[in-house]
Length: 432
Image (cartoon, rainbow, N blue to C red):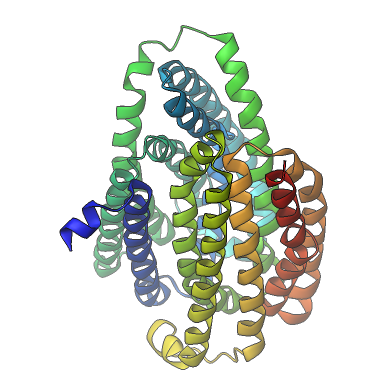
C-alpha cells in the first residue's frame, strides 16, 4: 500500500492530501453546527454565517497576485528559469494591497453592517467589540497568508499546506468546544470567529514567512518590469474572481435580506454537505493547475483533453451521489445537526441542487483548464452579463421561493452563460 502511494504522480499525492484536508474541514464544520446553533441561537448563528461568507471577498486582498505568481513559477519550472525575483515583487504588491484592504475595511464596515445585516442590528449592538470590523480584518489576513498555498502548489509541494490546514481546522474545532463549554455570554460571535481564524493565521502564516522571508530584505528593490508583468496578469485573474464572487458569493447576503434566520441555517447545513463534495473535485483541479500549464506549454494537448474528460466524469458523479444520499437521509441530517427544528425541505431543493452543482462542475472544470493556460479574456466578456442575471434572479426568486429561489437563480445564470460558452472556447482553442 505504501509503495502504491509512493509511486503515484506528485499532483495526485497533492490531491489525496487535499481530499483528506477537505474531508476534515467538512466534518468539523458540520459537527460544529450541532454545538454552535444552540450556543449562538438561530439569529446569531445566521450573523456568524454571513460574516464567514466574507472569507472569499477578503481573499481578494492579493488582487490575483497569488494566481499570477503561481502560473509564472510553473512556467519557469518548465523553462528552468529563476523565479525568485517574481516572488520578491509579489511580496511588495501584497504588502501594499494589504494596507489598502485594511483601510477599506475601516471605511466600509459601517455601510456593510447597515445594508447587509440591518435585520440583525439588535444582535450586533450587544457586542462590546464591533464584530463586523474585527471579522473583516481577521479574514483579510487569512486571505493574505493563504497566498503561500498557491506558491507551494506551483512548486508541487501542496501536501505541506494541506496537512497544516487540516491541523488548523482540528484546533479551531477544539477551541470552539472550549469556548462553548465556558458558557460565557459576552462577544459570543467574535470568540467563535477568533477560533476559526487564528489557527489558520498561525499555520499558513508560518508558510507565508518561509516563502517570503528572503523578499523582506529586497522590499525596497523595485523591478518595474516584473511588477508590470505580475500586475497585468493578476488584474485579469482578480477581475475574474471579483465577478465570480458577485455571481455565486452573494447568496448569504441576499438570504440575510430576503429570508429568515432559520432559512439561512438550513441552507447552510445542506450546502455545506454539497460543497464538501464539490470541494473534493476542486482540490483535484487545483492540484492539476500547474500540471495543466506544463502540459500545454510542452505541447501535450491530447493528454490535456483526456484529463479534462476524466475530471468531468468524476466531478459530476461525485456531486450527484452526494445529493441523492443527502435526500435519502435528510431526516437524519435534521435530527443530528438541526434538532428541534421543524422545516419543510422539499425534493425540489435537492433536484435544483443536483442540476446546479452538475452545471457548476462543468463550468469550474473548464475554467481551471483555461486559466491554467492563461486564457482569461473570455471571462471578461460573459461574466458581467452572468453577474446581472445571477443577482437579479437570486433576489427575485428568493423572495418567492426562499432557499429554492437562490439555487434556481444560480442555476439559470450558469446555464445561460458559462455552461456552454467555456466548453466551446476550450474545444476551439485545442483545435489550433
